[in-house]
Length: 357
Image (tube, rainbow, N blue to C red):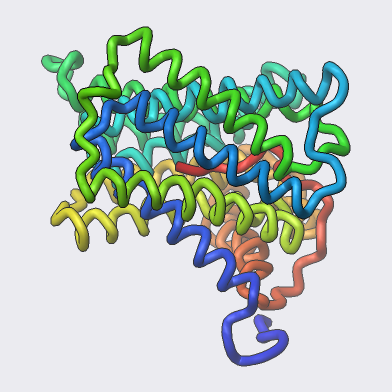
């Protein structure tokens, strides 16, 4: 039985979660608007140079130690800055130059699925048949969103979606590689340094590819997009993420990645007049279903072991998917919205970072 804990109003966790999903979801719209006037790599580099300074300034006021020490901490900064900031955003911005932000948000929501695959390959985390099936289902969802035409695989849309898929893989791989490198350095300090390292790589890439800052037309729209991405998404969004991370844990916080496409689609419709196709919605549902299968072990622990062993008998699989899976996913969602669902708390959580614009 579901009963509401506390007041009849939304819990603070729900408000923080909704704010984070909104801020990061609208970032895809801001990126698309800014790319009309600013080259992609320079745009991403400028954004994270400014955000890194602001985040480190915040860390200097609120943390006792902001400077990394030792090889492990600096290596973690390099990994996060190289994969999660530089590579991910370079590919994201280049991909969004060819496809709408709503589609980009759906494609990069594959990151948690890819994270499980990389964890199995890099960290020797086991990858069973159900998880592998979830990975394949996620790829099918991407293919549905792409609506690929075999006769035009080099078209702008296909190339853009390919770049976004590699962006999601870069984010996932960086998340896994950073896992064993975590130390006592506060996340906000590490993220600030990683933003600066990533911004240097992005700006170097901008110069290497011939982007000229002198040719940038800083229109009011471009300036507004840069300000939003720097302050709202790059600073406030990360601080909200850290707050949620501490309150409800990374597993539930990472569910924000599956609300971002909804916000991006609504923002694209309201601000840019874009329509969302049925194939985009269908593909997103496929990616989310793949995520649920990939996380079946966490779901098992959320139920306190009541699901039994994972098997392949048709009746058992159907029972898990149709009857128990929605209830188990509800455990994570209910923690966000301040509800009790008679789920036993579990310590097994996804510690592989977060999915952001």
